[in-house]
Length: 184
Length: 207
Image (spheres, rainbow over the protein chains, first blue to last red):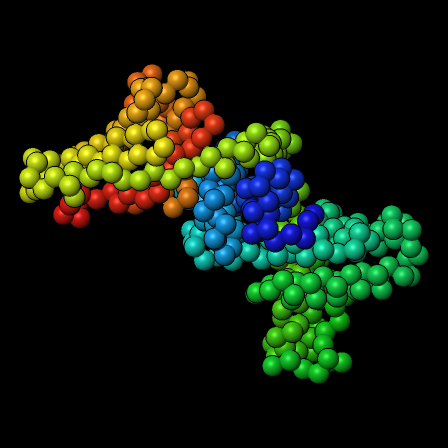
């Protein structure tokens, strides 16, 4: 992951830097792809919306140079597309988890805040050292969570020291989230 | 208000609470009610836990990523340098006060934009149900219709490309049943994009 800011990446794209485009897409890919699912839309819609959002982004790069927050712009465009897709599917039975349905009912508030929190977590995790990233991803992103013995073995640590390592990585992640402006 | 640091709930305890739903003891619950610091920690851990289970499913398929990343190929990025903003050169509402299309009960508006060698004519017609149809034609002033079978026009609302129409062999396009709002157009052909930044889609009386 690059440390270049969004405006720097957009400027580089406009200068013909393909790596900058890739960095932008990599930075926000999960954020954008997650939004249709949170609206209860099926995978085929999620794929279409993902592609359409990035096509819009590509075509709007000139005007996005002056946008303060690319993330907010991307979310707004994705939410609008979800709304249109959902409207087109109105009447069709949707298989939606309860929590996601709640979010869908108030996309302007609950959904957007949740998306922002999740994106800050992704960015903070990506800024961790490789070892801490491995620990945090195992603790939070694996289902079921591995046992501490299994995690210690994976990291080449003794079971006695895994607790210390876990706490240090959690502390580090918390600090990074604070630096990145995580709001709750 | 945060308690002294030494009194904060251990980060491992908060983690177990967020990740495995382990209940806090009474002292910790009381502390949590008073302590922004610990509530903040618990909040991000709960969000991360909720995200975590689904995060792998939010990874776009590789084929989809490949399609999107292809936009970043040098040849495509080069096209970004060829965005040209078209200028309004004629507006029947503004320029022809006496012609029949303007005035009480006006149901049509004609506009012309120009950029480089190209001319974009637009016709807006309102329906009784207050939707409108936008038709247009893109022509080279010297060569006539554009010879590009992939030429197309995007209707853009606040950066959101909501509809696409292909250009006919005579450079014509049409968007029916549009709501009344502010929109832009992107006309893409060959290696360039002509942009009409913003038109307010309401009739003269703001209907």
